[in-house]
Amino acid sequence: GAGVSQSPSNKVTEKGKDVELRCDPISGHTALYWYRQSLGQGLEFLIYFQGNSAPDKSGLPSDRFSAERTGGSVSTLTIQRTQQEDSAVYLCASSLGTASNQPQHFGDGTRLSIL
Amino acid sequence: QKEVEQNSGPLSVPEGAIASLNCTYSDRGSQSFFWYRQYSGKSPELIMFIYSNGDKEDGRFTAQLNKASQYVSLLIRDSQPSDSATYLCAPISGTSYDKVIFGPGTSLSVIP
Image 1 (cartoon, rainbow over the protein chains, first blue to last red):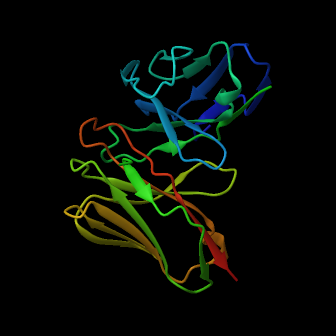
Image 2: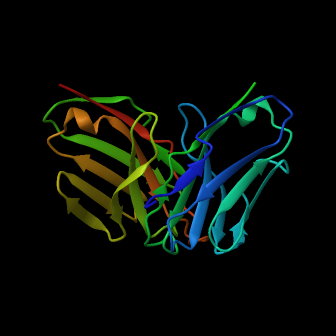
């Protein structure tokens, strides 16, 4: 497709389970970002990739969160031993290059609910 | 001090009026700024990009930047009900140039 694709669109899981969220960026976009948005809140930066490397992981809330990107394309965000406070919409965005002059294009997000 | 501050709103304006959305930021090194619009339940979408002091106009939207005051604003002229959304101010970090810092957003409601 032409836009950023995220899957699944919705995920409901029990506390303590692991979840994996997927992001397929726009073809040719080298930069990829993960954000988290809780209900009624702003966007919380999680991690950023330039190609396959992650220069900035400062936003990951805990060591239960990890992300990888392979082939400079698809990225997965993994949350281990989920907690109820992990419930949020997880947004992925991609851009052509450095953010200083390139807008980010967002996917529709994954709505994660932890029971 | 928060990195990016915006009036949380909700800001209500009548249809046809000018809506003024304000944003202040703490990173003096920030040089470029985005404004995103987010409809309820949807993802953010870019509406403006500004990097020079002064005004930048695009249709009904005008972005204003004052780096000395660390202030950026968005004006929406002839506001329409379809403009009702949350507007996110997003400076580019002055140290990590690939990192965008999103503000908490201002909720705008345009009353018909």
